[in-house]
Length: 132
Length: 132
DNA sequence: CTAGAACTTGACGCCAACGTCAAAGGCAAA
DNA sequence: TTTGCCTTTGACGTTGGCGTCAAGTTCTAG
Image 1 (tube, each protein chain N blue to C red):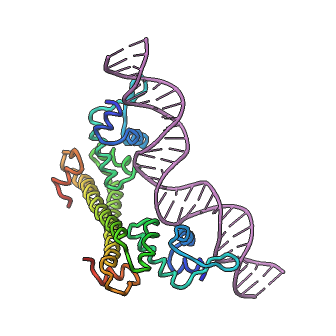
Image 2 (cartoon, protein in one colour):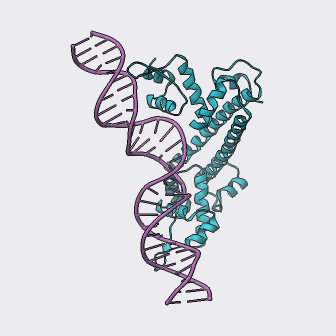
């Protein structure tokens, strides 16, 4: 199939597909005229790439990872980087949850204007008065 | 105090302070020579700004929000936008947690090469084989 | 008074995954 | 063959919160 059909099937833009190829994530053969031709398996490939992006990985990381996944062998160094990524994800979740609590404090201030004391910091307020 | 001292106290760069002023988040008076002068309260102000950034808000949103916080009155429209932000934060947390599960699948594949079946998608694998 | 640290504005750089526009060529149906 | 959609490469734009020079000015300790 050509790029437009693959884009439709995998629900991505043609621009994204060319970008993936540019980053070495997706390969294609060409027609005599130079147009890209993909096998049917490319659709799953693109979905996998999208999931890896969704897992917070960068193009470079995915480019490193894909051959390992294909070979079904992830080396120790790569595993270490995956564990790092996992740790970062965990940390980001914690950060975002703290951010959510800060927003809760603001929302509480907005919906309960009864407390005339404005807390010095949002963190103090979050610690002393749990959000509703 | 001048910009360098405020930067040290609030643990931000002078560039950041000028940027905050440019965005209308932080005000300063000037010396005869044109140098910025801040009151002591500026330190808390900067910390508040940083917390709002940490809560995932943009400069524009913070610029809208700060006067409301100062006046201790958050209007209904602003409250609505805060609730939107809160919802986005919640959604991002969910996304990140899903991303973490996908990473767990990859890590599991790396540490347990016993299962010779490579799952079609990371999500399917996450659904059928919980991470260790 | 002077050295030199601190400060000023201005402006480009950055990062990442594409969006978007442009000019030109390929491909299939009638 | 012609029509017209599809595809090609190239290259600049986007988004945000600053980092990082650069060239010039101000403040302050001695």
